Amino acid sequence: MLLRCGVSDENTAERVLDSVAKIAVLGAGGWGTALAVMANRYGNAVTLWTKFEDEAALIRQHGEHKKLLPGIPVPPSLALTTDLSCVKEAELVLLAVPSFAIAETAASMREFLPSGTPVAICGKGLEDGTHRRFSQVVRELLPAARVVALSGPSHAEEVGRGVPTSVVSASEDIQAAELVQELLMNPSFRIYVNADVIGVELGGALKNIIALAAGICDGLDMGDNTKAALMTRGLAEMARLGTAMGASSETFAGLSGMGDLIVTCGSMHSRNRRAGILIGQGRTPEEAVKLVGTVEGYLAARAAWHLAQREGVEMPITEQCYRVCYQGQNPQDAIHALMGRPKKHESEIPWLYSGKQS
Image 1 (cartoon, rainbow, N blue to C red):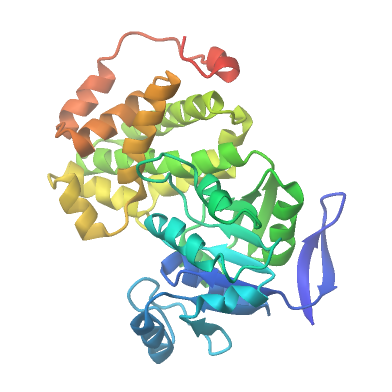
Image 2 (image 1 turned 90 degrees about the horizontal axis):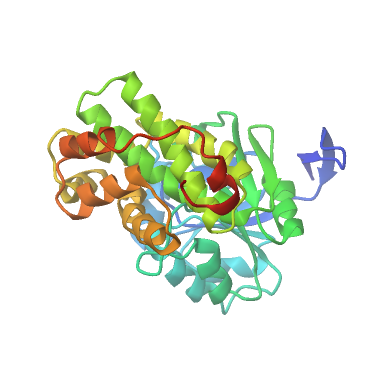
């Protein structure tokens, strides 16, 4: 039996006695390993899946993921497997593979996944090429699943250590979002529920672009003033595109918008920021991505730029990131282009209603 932290109808914390939850975490990278360790710590029966036999062997041999999550113990009670049929017995599946592997993994587990199983997407980004949100991709491939997006300010290094963290569980199926909250929330991992899955997913994807830009500013030795302006105006254009695509503007002031933006722009845990620093210091975007690893903001810049064109939404910071990453724009010239834009009023009330810039 497990003593789990739940939420009452009055939204007050209460302690409830419940059975152990069976949770399958797909993807043994830094984020997947951190989620698995966190869920296991509070008594759940957790299975961590990786596609790679050598990765599983190394984690078990060293008792930690030395490459991606060093110093965070992976206890023997946490099961490791390369067999995707582990989802058959799961009450909850956490899809924590890199963004480029989400579609492939979802398609591969379709034959094993029982109808009605909640699948929480833990990646943040947009599908390369189609620019679709990941919940749209997974819902198409797993029509019988109850698809949820899990997002918010949550560095793997801190979640793995049990540092207090708050995130959002979002779905049009609000009961599925609440089920994820019930099964996964614990004293170090607080989960809020939101029905605005469009806003939550776009917040998680678009903030990576702004973090990449923030890193470029750091690499150029710009000051606090520059970064504060970048983050504030970045949040405005995130919400501008989001509302044009059907999201609530309020969502971007929450954990999956402002919260995730703050943590990603300000921390060296952020691969997007680290890649941006390298670009600002003179590396090409391709070199920076190769050195840092997965940089979701690099791919998201292209997707968001195309979405902005489609929706007729002005996103000047995203546009300059796109030009730096894909058209050879010099970062210093990008700063000059942003600072030299036509005069504007700060108030953006019109886009709260229409999604367009006045």
